[in-house]
Image 1 (cartoon, rainbow, N blue to C red):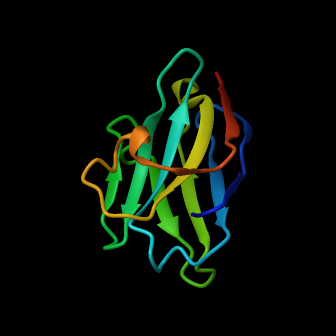
Image 2: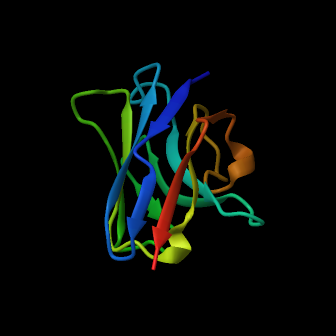
Length: 126
């Protein structure tokens, strides 16, 4: 199990930037297959925004490619980030950090993950 706590959400105007952080209660470089950011807007399903695997491979939703970057802190081995640039009103959602400790092909599906943070609200105004 991995305990996760997100921070960094807030309200920003379109075109602005935010950086989300996810603090884990353990080293996420060891024994964690996938770390991911998901988001869920009202009335919508939870969707994968960005995923980073233990190999370093990164995957992004088409809607955020070129604007968002997922990364792990090279020094603080228990922190995950999501740098969000050029934010759009359609990026408004609750953003969740998730961890997958076992290898699984469906690492882009929310239902695959068992370890979740409480979520942080991101609101982008036009």
